[in-house]
Every structure is written in C-alpha cells, then in structure tokens.
Image 1 (cartoon, rainbow, N blue to C red):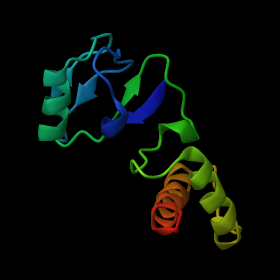
Image 2: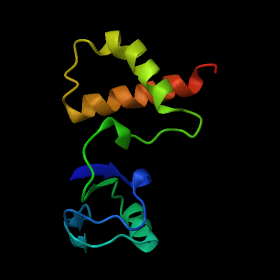
Image 3: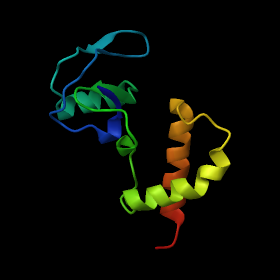
Length: 111
C-alpha cells in the first residue's frame, strides 16, 4: 500500500483504506475499484491523496510536469541536496518539499 496523489491515480486502481472527508464522513470504502466519477468526487471534497492497493511510497509517485523527465528530476535533486543536508528526508513533508523544489528547478532549466 502507498499514498498516491490524486493527480497520479488512474481509473481501475483499488482503494486500500476507507476515504473520509474533512468532517469524517465516509466517502468511499476500502476495496472499491476507482472510476472517473470517484476521482471527481475526491477532488470535489478536497481529498488530495489516497492509499492504493499495490502502490508503494516512492519517488516515482511524484507528479511531474509534462516537460520534465525522471532523469532531469534526479539531476535537480542532486543539485539541491546541499540545501537539504540538515533536513530529515525520511520525514514525508521534507521529502515532498525536496521533490517539489526539484520539479520546479528541472522545469525551469534550459534543455
């Protein structure tokens, strides 16, 4: 199981856990195969990420702009590493911050 951002979810994936809105109301139960309607409902209710069966928490889960390749992302992450040397990159927020900074850097670098 792994948390997957809504932008990276595809129709046909299966939920690993129940999805609740901010008020705690159940939106969709675990084990449901997702449809386009479900994805629309998630966006409407502000659900940003969900647990997907078979997905692993990984760097491949990051949403990249169309013009950025994973190789460019890796290059940008290496360049930014000194700025994050005192950060705990095991913490999900810090890891996400590095990924976002690297994606932005890679998209603004000349090809």
